[in-house]
Image (cartoon, rainbow, N blue to C red; front, side):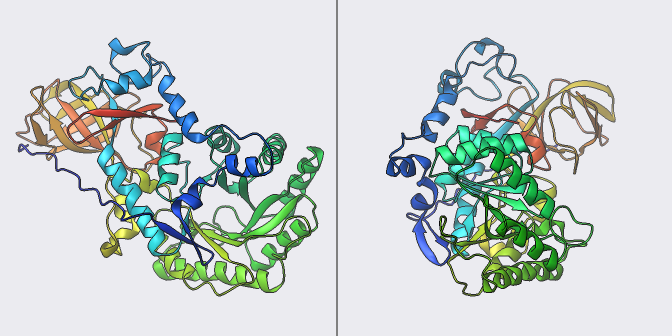
Length: 479
């Protein structure tokens, strides 16, 4: 293990106020992100909804204690804001191991990079919030030009609404009557709240319609027909004829409004650039066919502002950008909505290999922002060691954590070469060491993680750490 220094992170800042092309009409990022329910409610003569900045600021008032992992024991009872103001050092400030750190510089770099990418390719961006479930990060993304936030289940939508997010794309079907009852009330109470979700079956449409009618919904719920990525893929109507039948069912209701077509290219069987692009072209063709058939025609009470076409996970957004550039002129402006989520923290495993930036390196590169620090607690043999981090602390569903650095008690950092994590127990990591590796009980081991979604969800309060080890803030998650 040779001594090495951690590289400083260069953050590419966006030049000036970014713009986004929404349906061919440019709008500033502020217009795209900050046209909140407050403004719309005021225009409608209703009281303004509490703004997200205030809701996020109130997170600083939460008290810390042993219910949050890894925080210094002497901080029990302090508020998060008071703790952040102390600017403690992650390594010398009393934090206990294991502790997950999120790099402040790398986070900002990733936010800026995807903002620039979406702007460059005339895409609206609704990053998938299921990745972090962190309202502070939702709003950092919105401040970086995001149209809104994508989510997956009703609980997540409720969290986003509690923190003032006014544009939500639910990339899933919604047939739960209790959730639809809540949604109807939320839409009726806030004229500025825009919500969209998938539909992929006539039965699902019927369940939605029945629940919304029972709830006395006054606003129609906007839906997009989900086209499946292929036979054996996840959700979605399997054929164009199936999609048309679902669209007909929507048109027969008085509670739903068809606004577009969507899907998830990450489920294309045996994916390749050619297969993914072929499926995306089916999505574009379906959108154009629906438009030509008048399926997006405005009804008397709810005129459409745009037609929505949406795709884009974290592995093929380059293909989405290329094919969405081919969308023909339709009867209304087109909202081309990208939904990638893992970019916010990126990773040192799965997405390091799959990121589209590997195929288009001239467009930039994401930086892994997570590092999990654990401590060597046992060294029973020359070839074996154990750290105090396990399945409850680190993602392991796609890849095991990667040993990157070893930190001595005096602050010296050594390369993690020759040290391999080969298994995880609930609370232990199993390390194998090459001959001659001087790994000691008490050393801190820095781990790179794979899969952001299952890294965030193990931590309720995550230190945001500068390159010098100073903890500048704490990110609260709601899983």
